[in-house]
Image (cartoon, rainbow, N blue to C red):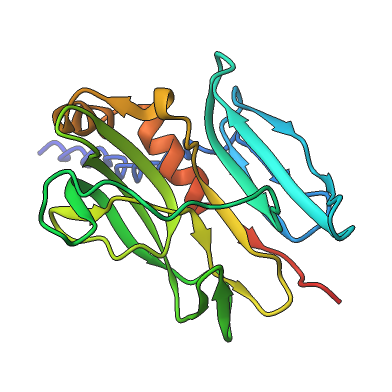
Amino acid sequence: MSATPAPTPTAEPSPTQTVDATADWQRIETEDGLFRWRIPADWSIVDESGESELDGRWMNRMEILDADGEVLAFFSSHYTGGDRGGVCDDWDGDGTGYVPAVVHLDEAVQTAEGPLTSFVGPVEEGRLVAFSSQQTADTARFFAGHSLSDVREDSVPCLTYSDVPTPEGYPSTGFGTTGDPERWRMASLEEGIAYAATEEYDQLIEMFRSLELLEGPQ
């Protein structure tokens, strides 16, 4: 009787390896050593930071550019450049200061432990948001970044500020898409929905999410 050949061992399937799409991203750190975040390898920074002419304190002013050199977003802290604005048209006549919107993202962001403050005063946490809003009857706008705005399911404040809650001693800080009306003006909410499905949108969100607050002022 011939021996039965031993079964050939089968190799265990190797676990699927997750590719880190941000592995080659650049690490950006402000010169005052308070903030750090990451940007895609082919994006760049225009840094106009320096001492404030008003009080001598360090002021961060940085623009984030895409691979084509187009400004996508900004980072600022202790910015003393003037009025933030506070009036917008109630074009839809509902009297609430809110405009119709499609919310793409709204997540809590705890930038640091302990009491937090911003332009508006003490807050418990910040949020990372992205939405397309109907700014007038004929135009829409895309926004993404840190914010304290009360984003609702189908509407947002007609004015949105890129506030980042920071611990006591840190300067007031903003991090979001540029306010340039031409860059983020869209013909419709549907155009914003289409943009939120792009790779660039994913990169923007990951950049904002990567913000770190480093050792605070001494």
